[in-house]
Length: 99
Image 1 (cartoon, rainbow, N blue to C red):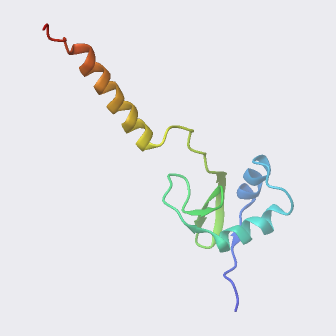
Image 2 (cartoon, rainbow, N blue to C red; image 1 turned 180 degrees about the vertical axis):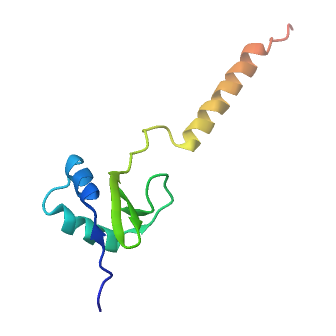
């Protein structure tokens, strides 16, 4: 079984070098493109691990790193915090009755 061969442009090799991809960048990018999954991204159309690639007509034209999402609370924690604030606000508005 033969794999589809991808050509790698000089620009993509230069970008990979600047981003710290070690070894034979041309060979590694071609291998990454073969194993890449489709991607919906503003800059590229393929994804391999933490990398995006723009592949046009069998050529890797551009490459970059996917940005990590900033750390934050999970949605359930946010909802818990909002509910807690609502309860605190309601308690602050509540006036105890005189007996």
